Length: 126
Image 1 (cartoon, one colour):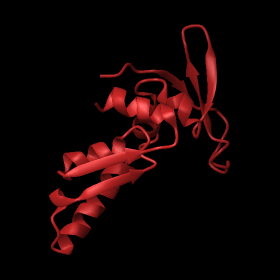
Image 2 (cartoon, one colour; image 1 turned 90 degrees about the vertical axis):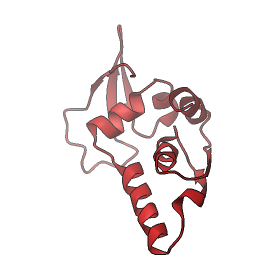
Image 3 (cartoon, one colour; image 1 turned 120 degrees about the vertical axis):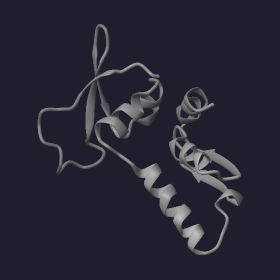
Image 4 (cartoon, rainbow, N blue to C red; image 1 turned 180 degrees about the vertical axis):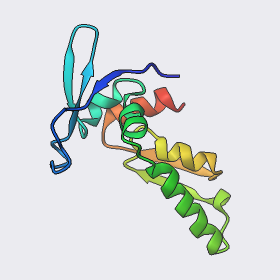
């Protein structure tokens, strides 16, 4: 289990903000860092931070929803989900791949242009 991080969202309303303007504060032992939602390189360097922000706090359920839709579509076409070979482009820290593996795909390759994403995937989902 990853440690819980001290995270604070801004007090001002950001619902109309551009996606590149959305941010949160990460409180350390002696500092407070402002991190934008799309600063993945910074987020992935902190174990469990991505999951805490996007899944626990913001309630993102994309990997489970997308993999469920894919599995349902494969079944409707009389395909076999366990025979799928998946290339996950923009794999990030591997959350989508983890969900697909839980559902039984046969082969998965994930790639991402952010080096820290690879490091996070290896660290958090070996």
